[in-house]
Every structure is written in C-alpha cells, then in structure tokens.
Length: 289
Image 1 (cartoon, one colour):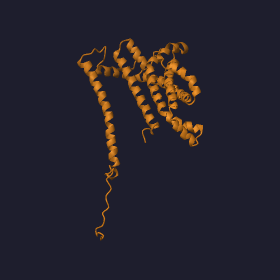
Image 2 (tube, one colour):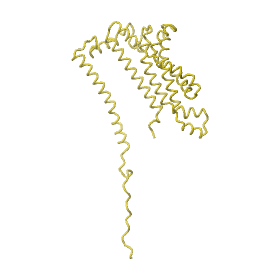
Image 3 (cartoon, rainbow, N blue to C red):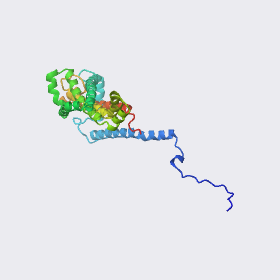
Image 4 (cartoon, one colour):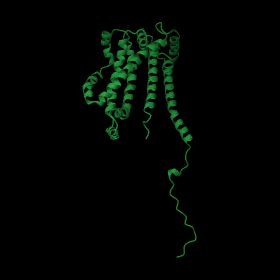
C-alpha cells in the first residue's frame, strides 16, 4: 500500500493545570491580602456594635448610671482620671505598678517553669516525683493563698509578686512537661539514626517539637498572671489598677470601676497579641509543608 504523502500530525496531550495561564504572583498576593484584611474589619465592626449597644441601653432604655454609666459619663470620668489621677497618683503610675508586679511574677514563673517542665517530660523519674505535687496544687485557686502570703511575707510587694509567680509557674510547668512527652518517637529515632548526640537531640529535635505546647502554656500563664493581678493588689496595695477597682467599688464610684476593668482588659489583650506575634515568629515553620 503506498505511503501517504501527508505528514502525520502528532496527537496533542490533554490539557493540564500547568497549561492554564499563570496568575501573576503579585495578583495572588494582593488577593490573599484583601481576603485577610476582612477579619480585622469584622473585629472593628463587632467593637462598634458593642459600643452602639452600650449607648442604646444607657441613653435610650434609660439604665441607671449607678448600674452602668453611659458613654459620655464614662469618657468624661476617664478624662478626669487622665488629668487628675486617682488617690493622689497619676493613672500611668497605677498602670506602671500593675505591669511591674504582673510582669515580674510572670517572668520569674516562666523562667523557672520551662526548664523544670522540660526535665519532667524528659525524665520519667523526675516526672514521677513532681507530677503529684503540681497536680495537687493546680486546682487550688491562687487567691486561696492570699492569707498565707500575708502571714509569711507581709503586705509588701513580695507577697503580691509571689502570688502571681505561683499562678504562672503552675500553668507553664505542666504544659512544658506535656509538650516534651508529646514529641513523636519517630523524630527521636530519626535523630538517633543520624548520629546526633543527646544534647543535639534535645536542642535540635525535642525542644522545637515541644515548643508549641510550651508557648501555649506561656500564653495561658500571661493571661492568668494578669487576671490574678486584681487579687494580688488586694494585699494592702496603695497603687495599681486592681487597687482602683477595689477602692472605687468600696465607695460605689461605678465609672471608676468600669475604667479599671477596661484598662485590665485592654492591657491583657495587648499582652496576648504580643505573645501571639512572638509565637508566630518562633513557630514560623508551622503550617508549611
């Protein structure tokens, strides 16, 4: 049979995703940023809705200022506090004392709790010795120790700082131990097969794997330490945000109570955002395949 003079046309392979027109990286990045920007907007809208509800309840429904001050009354009293201070001291001094107490107790608690927790997770013997002790103290609320702190250490700053220290230490040590115990065995075996020393195995394999749990404990401890602040400043404090709340409550100055509560909440939110930012930087490898 004579060969055909027409050249054979090779068949075209089916289209794949690779053949699709590439989306410029700049356009994809812009789309992702626009998609993520809606979440802060949602947060701002939620805050705005709460402010509107507050104004509606106090200014339209007529809730008494002795129960909940209206926004104009609240901000007028806040302006007065910013100008004149409280109990003879500027508002920034009260905030500074509270931050000093909370951050000192929190920092000391975390600095001691992380190595102790890592040792508990690394050694079964140490864990067997310490776990019952920490397990016993964990469900006891820190404010239950206020009378003991006063009797043992007096009414000075040491008793306040130790109360915050105890709260932050207990939460961080148990999370650190749990993080070390949860390190996958496969990672440890892979490190051993690669010839890592025990020190390298701990610093390069086990510690990074336990870091998410450790930072979760640190974040929880920061929130608890700041929350315990009000209870700590019950111990004969003459300055601090907790002192403002308790003193204003004693004399039924409801606007000052709400100002103190909002300051505690706002500073706590800032602390949590800072720790979350540090967590994202330290755990930058999470979620990347």
